[in-house]
Length: 351
Image (cartoon, rainbow, N blue to C red):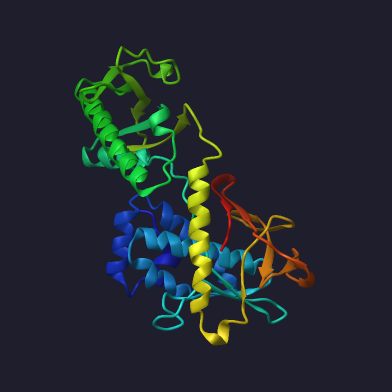
């Protein structure tokens, strides 16, 4: 079992909470990211790390949210600022508590609300990996997906429908792989189709044809093709591959994000009086700041909106206030890389 020493030490006193995170993160992806960020936090520029062990243990979704806050705290740290993760309810009952309290070198304080966006992509890999583990099928599965599994969801109803489809497709693939395993087929191809009755699959040993054109019968829809082979670890897993279509410029996703940002901004009216003079941080693409470690790099384009004024943050950590330039709606773009591979791209408004 993979070890995450810094994270485990932080959560040592909350064994039940750590178990909840493990249950929701069986592959250790979220915990691995947290471990790398905690290593970067060793320089002491980030406080309040215990939030990972308290608020962050409510479930894996909340844990991932707090990890995102830590990522932005480290980003401010790369500018020479001191950042503290604020626990939920830090400002007291009925008050609005943002995620970060940042203090710049010149003494100015900034309150930061971190919004974590989602691509809305169907979560098929997670559903299929769970099926492989449950049925003890030792295959690695690579996918080539059709339109239905390539379109991102933006509303709760669309996410629910997407999750149902992913569960059904994962089950159909697992049925086909069970047949392959019993038949001694350890390297092959499954194609999944939908018709009026439901889902069906075709099994062949032509794994090289994964990205080939699937022949579709009348009244049927091609859902996806899935190449499989024995896992070198003996444990089943899914993920990797391509989609047949990539949807860009989805207006509904953008509108939902803007609505969420607007709701967050309105909470500023419930900040305690002693913090009303603190800036409410947003970012705009203008000047590039880079921070790197042996494990990867974080890059961001950042300019801060400070109560209607604009403040440039340079890569030396200094800040120069330019009070004569009003600042409108702004944006932040952050790309994270791990061991040279992009693992996340977030672009939008940081409210």
